[in-house]
Each structure stands twice: as C-alpha cells, then as structure tokens.
Length: 247
View 1 (cartoon, one colour):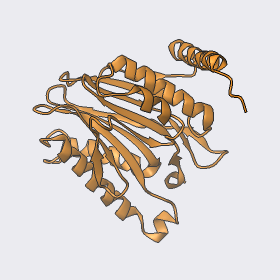
View 2 (tube, rainbow, N blue to C red):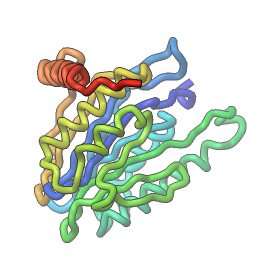
View 3 (cartoon, helix red, strand yellow):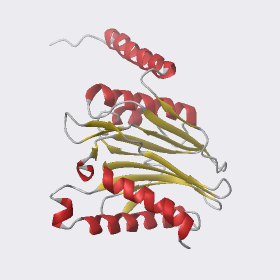
View 4 (cartoon, rainbow, N blue to C red):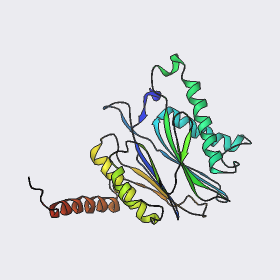
C-alpha cells in the first residue's frame, strides 16, 4: 500500500554565508523485501525573486500529497509559494498544509495504524531577505537554522552527524560543504541499509535565484566513488598513525 511506504532516508541541508547546500538520498521502503527509489528533493522557483528547495523524510503518501498540492496552488491559488513575502511565511504555509493532509488522512479506515507523519527541510531565498533554512516537524511547527546551528538533518542522521559537527561552520565554502555532505551521506550508507544511492544534490548561490546547480549521483558516479575511496583510505591511514593506548 502506498500509505505504508516510508522514506527511511537521510537528508541534510546547510545554511552558509555564500548560500545553501542540499543532499538527499532516494531509498524508500515498506519492509526488507519492498525497496523502491523515490526522489526526496524538490525545487520551486521563478528565477526572479523566489527560489525554494524542499527535502522530505517520512510517509511517502504524505510527502507526495504536499508536493502535488504546492505545485497545484502555484497555478491555481492566489496565495502560494511564489507570492508569499518571506521564508518564514513559506515555512508556516507548508506546515499548515502538512497538518491539513495528515488530519485528512488519519481516519481509521484510511490510515489503518500507519504513521502518516513526515519531516521537511525548507531552504531558499526570497528577494529582500538573506537565504534561510527551516526544519518543519510533523506537527507543522518549525525552527530556523542559525550561526550556532548552520545545518539540519532529517531521517537516519546519527551516522552522518559527526563529520558535519567537525567541519561545517557558517563560513564553510559551498563546494567544501557539499563534499562534507557527501561524506556524511557515505558514512550513513555504510552503516544503515535503509539509505542508499542515487543521491540528489543542489547548491544554491546567494542572490542568484537559480536552482540549476543540481545533479543526481548514481552508484557509477566516478567523482563520488573517488571521494568514497579517498575518505575510507584516509580514515584507515590516520587511525594507523594514532598513538597506541596502553593499560
């Protein structure tokens, strides 16, 4: 059943002085014998004054409904992602929509005990503001990234957090942050079978209002394979140089 598919995923977004960086896997499952690939990175923009990126983790039916309704309302509704005046208003708008969908689908005959909740990362820029990044909880409330907390994660995040804690600061260059995000993702893939390639990555340059710096990384991607090999080999080499602990 579609409403039983859960995006056991890992997504990370970083707010930096020069813009924003996003990395998301695409593994979705409803048990060990039902593995699928669904995109979890979505973009909304007009190239002029609104550029938004949404990452999702949780119930697939809920996240697909959110994305579909956001697209429809851009075409049909007076109030939509392209008309709201601030990123705060965007986060509140999406949070309300999330609650509407979950409330709509939580009738016993529809949900059948399935957890319909999801978590979202919303980042982007609206003209007149700096780029901003929000974590939206299943309840529809949200928090914003800050200089003290320049990145957010959703999904299976514990394996990939240590490298981010050690490297990412607000002044980290965008390309360096992307490399760090990919290593964080590789560490998660190594330790958790529910996260896997392909990956969607996107770099947003401050004040560009362009969402074109994006690509998908497959299992055959030579750059990612080289990064994975260099990181793994470097860790082993460093470990072998550590002082011996004696008792």
